[in-house]
Image (cartoon, rainbow, N blue to C red; front, side, top):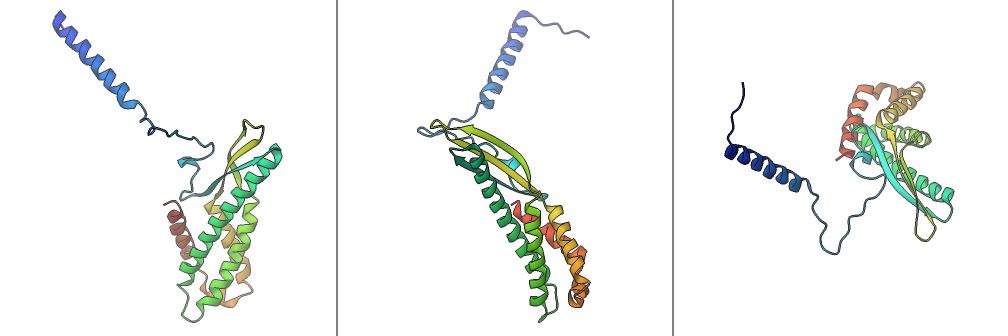
Length: 196
């Protein structure tokens, strides 16, 4: 099965392919920044370093004349951001999970649950994973360290569950009211809200 093209048809096909190629190239060009503005690309940031429904993530930068100090500053800031995000998550989970307790008894149980969860947050911060680290040297000789770190949401959830499970053996009220499946559902719902 062959194609028979005359010279005129062949020229049209080649011209059509050339135009299609030019359109493809022009469509793939990036849009120029507005006049007087320059796009800044920040290492260890962007969509792949943001919190999602599986990981709590944070990015930070540290600046110092000493490279180790710049890294420590970045790690301190990223840890503080992760702690803040986890504490907000734990607080919302405690409130939403606590609302399922019987009226009049919910505050005490919710408070105990939240206290245990905050202990787990502190423990889990020591296990944060660095997912990106870039060290730069500035024009004035200082060091700039960019870091992105994450904690797995399911590890936090399991840590809280473990802490609560150990504590409920001594607390009759908490033992009666604690429902892991309900806690897990509330936790996962709140994790997905963090990603929004």
